[in-house]
Structures are given as C-alpha cells and as structure tokens.
Length: 365
Image (cartoon, rainbow, N blue to C red):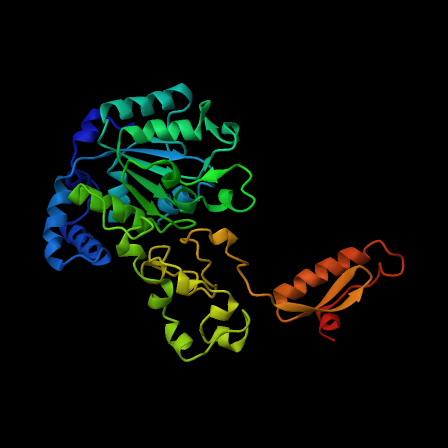
C-alpha cells in the first residue's frame, strides 16, 4: 500500500522523478487526445490536469480469471508514459501485484476502502460465480460478497477483460459455475467496460487518464465501452479491408492469398462484427495485431464470443470409413494433422497395422 507521502505527490512529480521530459509528456497528451477523439485544443487542458492530479486510490479485485488482463498491462514493454500513468495511481490492493499477503493484505483493502470511501476506483477482472460461493473465494469471502462490499464505496467501477464485462470463458455453455458479469450485479454505480481477452493495455491507461483529467468516465457506447476505443469495427480500420472490397480472400492459412495479405474473412475472421482498437493501436508497443500476423480476429471484445460458433471454418469433409474411424480429405495441414492422429491412434496395437504409418499423401489419394 502506498505511503501517505507518496499519495501527496502529483502525477507531474512522479513523471519528473522518472526523467520524463516535457516533450515526451506533451506527446503523450496529444496522442491521448487523438485516441479519445478530442480536439487538439484539449491538449493543454489534459496536460495541466494530469500534471496536477493526485494519485487516486485503486482497488483491483480478481475473480474467475486467468491473470491475462494483469499480464497484458504489466508486460506492456519498456518504461513509457503509459506505464508511468499506471504506476502513478495508488494501487492499494491487487491479488497478483501486492507485496502483502494473508490478513495484512485484507487489512490494506479495508483501510483503503475506509480512508477513500466514495472516491476510490474499483477495477475488477474475472467473472463472478453465483451457483456456489465455494467456486471462488478470497480470504474465505465469496467473490459476490467481496464485490458488493467494495462497490458500495467506489466512485466508479472499471470492468477489465471479457470475463468481467460479459462473463467470458467461465460463462460459456454450459456455464457450470453460474458465472455473471459485473454489470449483471451492480446497477447503482457508473461502470465502464474494457473488454478483450485480454484488453489492450493503452485502453486501460487511457480510461485512467480520462478519469484523472476530467474526474469522470469517457463517453460510452450501448455496451458500456469507451467509444474512443470501441467506436469502430476492426474491419473498418483493417489494412486488409481493400482486399475484402475487391473480393480477394485467403481460402487457407498458407495459400497464395494468405501470403499476399488478402482478407481473412473466409477463414473465420470476425473483424466486421468486432469493435476494438486493435487495428490502429495494435499490441506489443504498436508492433502488430492478430490479423497483421496472419490470424483472423476472434471477436474477443464482443459478448458471448466463446459461444458464437467455431473460431475456424471447417477445412475438411468426410470421404470414407475405415472401421470406426472416419478418414478426411484434408484441405490444409491442420485438418490433416487431426485426421492423421485419429487414424494412427485407432490402428495402434493392431498386429497387422503396427508397422504402418499413415501419411499425408495417403489422405490426399
């Protein structure tokens, strides 16, 4: 938990102590204004507000999740202004990052909630199980009880990741834990949803920056997501869009179309129905994003994406039976590998088949 003296420091103090130049700081403010669709005239206001902002108390609760959201943020790369924005908050409780453990950790949370009642930001990642409290507890407290207690004194709630915003993987059919999202339970607090599996780091820091600057949440869409980052589909921002318009599609992951960078829609890309900033903000300090790396968008920032049908178009069709095993005509290496594995397992142990190996050529005949 941050010391009293640390909490009195402004963000400007923190940035200067880390050697961040005025030029770098103003560049970050300009980038933030651009990303959040603000007028350039707002840049000086953003800079002044951030420079004088005190460190807000943040309580971060992790429930049914994989820690991917925290990993996404903490592995954002070399030290940047974005990282320092995150570093400058008073992160008073976080299961993964806190140094304290056991009773001391819970005492720190209770102390932060009491001292900053009505002012702290509550960040939640992971879904909340409702069928049985024992599915996920912390310090003997059910996720539901911990969420409701922490939400009561929060100024606002940021649901980070698809599990917290929509229920995510835990909620996928058959949803054995009865998982629900934060917004399914909290109705009397402002909630901002930052979906993604995991979400883009700069989106999280962008939301924090907006709150530090204006003391309020950014404009949201009908799913509670910041419009600045989720206002357009990945398809509309995708550099492969011209190929879509021309009707040029990759048919398999390794055909000539794929090598030429054609549209991945026929390979299951969900870019047209997915709203996120991946195509412009990108990942790994702006290095790339899945489609640029040759993989279709999975639609992870949309509700029910785990139950929205298979991620990939079938690459094979059944052609013949061998005993109880179905052979497939492979249209790609992935499908061939599945068929090879199944057939080799089926013939393993048979005296007259033990010495044989099924080959890709056999499947293609």
